Amino acid sequence: MNSLRPLWVFTVLVVGVVAGYALQIIAANRGYPVPVLHWTSLVSMGAACVITLVMGIRIKLFTSGRSKKRVNGIAAARTLVLAQASVYAGSTIAGWHGGILLGLLTAGAMGSAAVKSSLVMIGGALVMVIVGWVVEQFCKLPPEDPSDPAAKSEGKDDQGYAAGTN
Image (cartoon, rainbow, N blue to C red; front, side, top):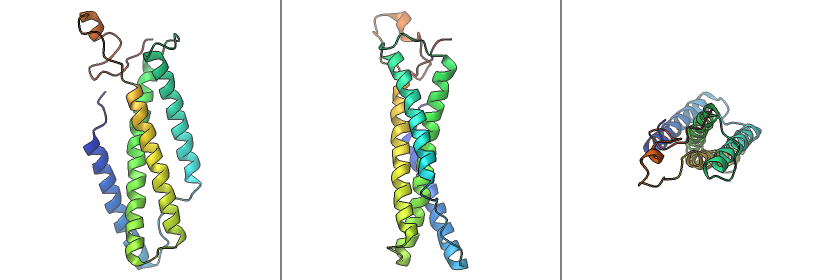
């Protein structure tokens, strides 16, 4: 499994900004409402963050040796994938609403509900990115003693992530 690459996350953010800005301009020119997520979307985003964090803490406890309960390898891989998906989803949502916010601010709609909603969604998306990034780090095993050749690969994959046990 590959680790997150900041350049890809930044690219997703920039594509989201461009798409949000362009669609906000198109919607405004055609008389459609601003395409922002409603604040109730924060409930879903918060639930995703809590689930990701709980699963990540479980992995971290096992990899740090504070929990003797074994972690299933598939569960460890799913936790890592969920963490990475949270980072990409959060950067997409933040970029989309950042582009909409940019379009609204250039149009002079500073006090509108769409501006407030965009700011709230950007904040929630940034929390999602941070939680995903932290949980991805939880899934990495600490470095082993380099003098022990068997310890170099036991329990982790080629990227240093926890492989778990079945």
